[in-house]
Image (cartoon, helix red, strand yellow):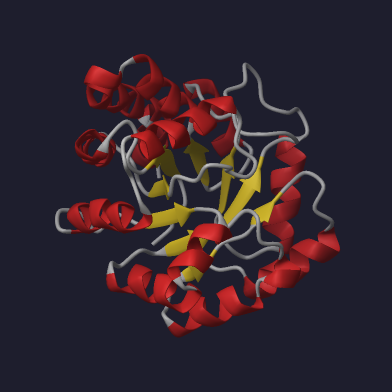
Length: 257
């Protein structure tokens, strides 16, 4: 499932188009990804910076829909059992039908769902269907999350913890927060799930630093979406190259375990 020492790339389903999206995801799998986080395109994504906003817009402009997004995952599932977590606005889940969405995810062996715009206090229905259809419900933990709230989240969250490395939106950063190691330590103490760190991860040094600080995995999204933006005609090749590069620190660590 969502194991320790993992690299989880993020891309938006349908970006830059249906067929290329499938190539991109296959390239990630073939070049070292341990798990995938796949976004369902939405016109007003929560917490995303300009790079991933543009990725959502490209996917929508190409004609992607929730059904077509599921279709891409179905094609991937015929070739790989890699753990898949989907991230999307609850608006899409609601319009699809909440129970129907969770049932569809279960049927496609999607492992986890994260709706960043649904707080713990409003997640009762999601948790109910996640348990009913055996899909992990993932929640965000941020630098402002209190220890008391971490303990409450620990009671309902499953699969892994998505730890937001900094305040603000998604996007590449030159350096990670100096407070991140202590934050990782606190989350690991209070919560008993693998801790995957996202937001700002874009370089080998970031992946190395996160793992040294005790995180179980690194999530990288904006760096891949930026490559698609700059190389729409050969995006899959460029993304495969970057994925292979970013997974090198993990390979070295695994060799010595």
